[in-house]
Amino acid sequence: MEKKHIVCFSGGHSSALVAIYCVDKFGKDNVILLNHDIKTGMEDDDIKRFKKEVADHLGLPITYANYKSIKNPDELPDQFDVCMDNGTAITSPTGHALCTAFLKTIPFEDFLSLNFPTSDSLFDKAVPCIIYYGFDKGEEVRMVRRSSHLGAIGYKADYPIALRELRITDTNQIGIKKPNTYTLFKHANCIGCLKAGLLHWYVTYCLRYDVYCKGIILEEHVAGDYTIHRITRDGLTVNISLLELKPIFEQMQKDGVEATEHQSDKKFGRLLRKYQIEAVNINKPCECVL
Image 1 (cartoon, rainbow, N blue to C red):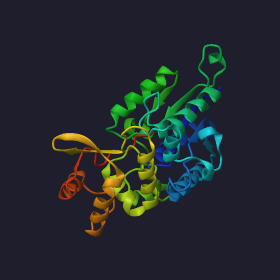
Image 2 (tube, rainbow, N blue to C red):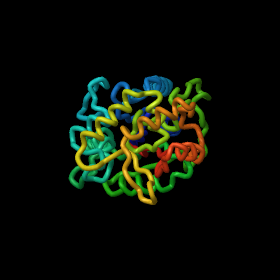
Image 3 (cartoon, rainbow, N blue to C red):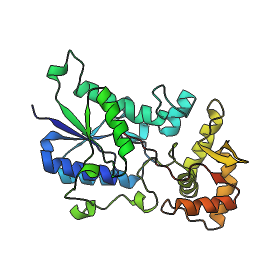
Image 4 (cartoon, rainbow, N blue to C red):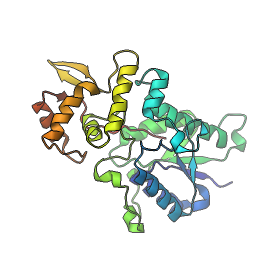
C-alpha cells in the first residue's frame, strides 16, 4: 500500500508550501491535508479562505481533526473556554499549554491512532505515513523536539522548507494571495494567543478588544496567581495582568504606538520602558503544532 504523506495544514503560509511540495512529489492521492479548525472569530476569516483556495488548487479535501469531533467552527471552544473549563491556563499533564493540548495535540494523536495505528498487534495492518511540518530554516530546536516526540509514539516527521529547495516558495506564484493576517501579525496563530508576548497582546488590545477582555476574564477566573505575562520590576520577574496592562496599552494607543507585530522587538521594548514596563517576553510565537 502506498505511503501516506500527512501535511499539518495549519492555514499558515509555510504549511501551504509544504502541501504544494508533497502533492508535486507524491501525487494528490497520497497526501492528506490535516487541519484542526479554530473557533469562528479566533482565527482570521481570511485564513479559512486561504486554506480552501490552496486545497482547491491541489484538488484535495481538508481533513479535519477537531476537538471532540465538532464539525461546526461556531460550536468549538476557543483557547479561553478550554482553560476556563479546566480552571487553569498554564499546562496540561503532558506539559503543553492546555489550549494546544485539547484543541490540537489530543485530536491529532487520536486521528493518528485511529487511522495509522502503530501498536504491535496492528502494526502489520497499518498504512505507513510520514508527517510534514512547515518549520523554517533556523527552527532546528523545534524540529528535534517534534521528531523526538513523534518517534517515541512510532511516527516519522519531515520538514521540506528547512531541508530542501522548493519549487514554489510563495503562494502568489500560483495565484493565491497570502492571508491578510500577515499584514499585521507575523504568524497565523489564534488571536489572543496565550503563549504570545506583549507585542501580540498590544495589537490584540488595539484591534480585538473583545478578545483582550476574554483574557482578562480568564486571568481573574483561573486558580492561583497565573497571568499571561511577566515583567521585570526592581530586578525581580513578576506577574502583570491584562487588567493592569490595559491603561498602559490605552495610553500607548493614544500616543500613536503602531499596532503591528512587524516592528523591531528592541524598539517596542524601548517604547514599553517609557511606560515603566520592562518586558520579559515581547514577541514570541505560540509554537503550536498539530
